Amino acid sequence: MSNGDYLLYLNFISHRSFNDPSQYPIFPWVVQDYKYEHLDLGKQITFRDLSKPIGAHSSDKLETFKSKYFEIINKQSLGFPGGRSASDFRTDAGSVDGSAEKPYMYLSHYSSPGIVYYYLIRQVPSYILKVQNEQVSGPPDKIFHDINLSWQNVLQLLPDNKELTPEFYFGDGSFMKNKHALDLGLNHLGQPVQDVAVPQ
Image (cartoon, rainbow, N blue to C red; front, side, top):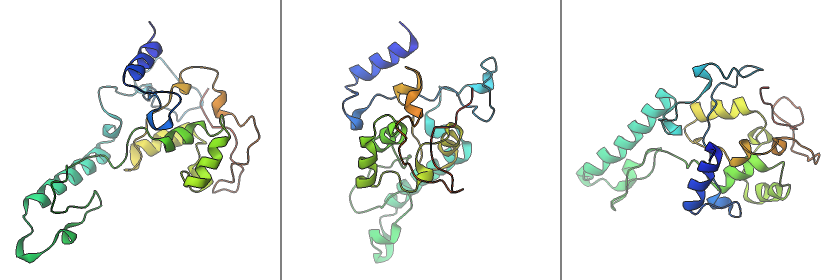
C-alpha cells in the first residue's frame, strides 16, 4: 500500500468524503521549500517536519497561540474581581464569559469548505458561485495562485492553518490550471489570476 493510499484509508475510516466539502479528505503539506524554481528532493530541508502539527511550524506563531491559550485560562481563573463583567475580559483569541469556555490554541481549522473551495476553484467552476455567495475568498489575491505564498501564509498568519487536499498527490495537477479560462479577477499588481505558480 502506498503512502497516499494509506492516507486515503485513514480519511475514509474517519468518515471523510469527496462528496462533502465540510468533511473533505485531508492530506498534509510534505514539501516546505517552494522558494526555488526547482525542488531538490535530496535535501532534508525540502521536507516538512511531520512530527509537528501545521500550526507549530513557526516558533513565533506557536508562541502566540500558547500565549492566547493561557490568556483564556488565566482570565477564567480571575473570577471577575471588583464587580467587573466578562465583557471586560475580551481577547483576540476569543471571549470569556461566565460559562466554562474551553481554552483553545488555533484560530482556525486545518480543513473547511472554504479551504476546499480555495484549492479546487479552477477544477470545479461552480465553486466560484459558492465563493461569491458565501464570500469565502475576498479579494482575488486570496484565491489560490501561488503555492509558495500559500505555504508562507501557513507559517506566518495566525488564522491560516490549512492542510492540503488529495488532489495535490493524485492526478496531473490540472486542478491548478485555469483550463476553463475563468475570470478569477486581478491580483494586487493588476495582473489576471490564472494558473497556480509552482516549482518544477
